[in-house]
Amino acid sequence: MIVLVGSPVAHEDGRAAGLFATLVPALAAAGASVEIVGRVGEDARGEQLLHDLRRVGAGHVAVFRDPTRRTPLSEEAGIPLDADDVQLGLGYLRTIEAILVVDPAHGTLLEVAAEAARFNDARLVVLTSSAESAAVLAAIPAARFAPQGRTPPVQIAYERGSEAAIVPLLCAHLLADDVSATGAQ
Image (cartoon, rainbow, N blue to C red; front, side, top):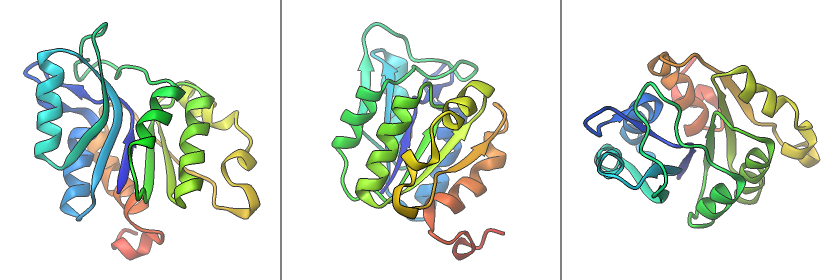
């Protein structure tokens, strides 16, 4: 199973938008089981968004509904997650092969994801779209992610709006231990 850690966003009508709208169908088409650990508003748009993501291949057992927030639109950032959200969400899931953390807001969230990756012997990929999220990753000593010679997380930087361009690269890192095994170069 591949776990996407980050809150999805929607179009005005509730259809999935942004990275998850592009990445989930690509991973599902490659045969991957996909689960999301995230947060949406407790509103009609959030329900439609989760229905749309389920339709294209993502489970959402670990997506929390927040009654104090509305589900963000595509041009907005997803609802922030904290380390407790991520720890609880990952605790619901078994047989994790890879974890993708999208735009981490703080180091404790990343440390929880890294611990889950170590526990499950899973790959960890961190996607950053801002200097702030890249700085969060850079501030954590590599030994916290990769003790005893384990492979450190893969960091991929992208610009908002260019999500479709990075999906093949993300799929290559999430689906195989060896990138060349997926046919990606």
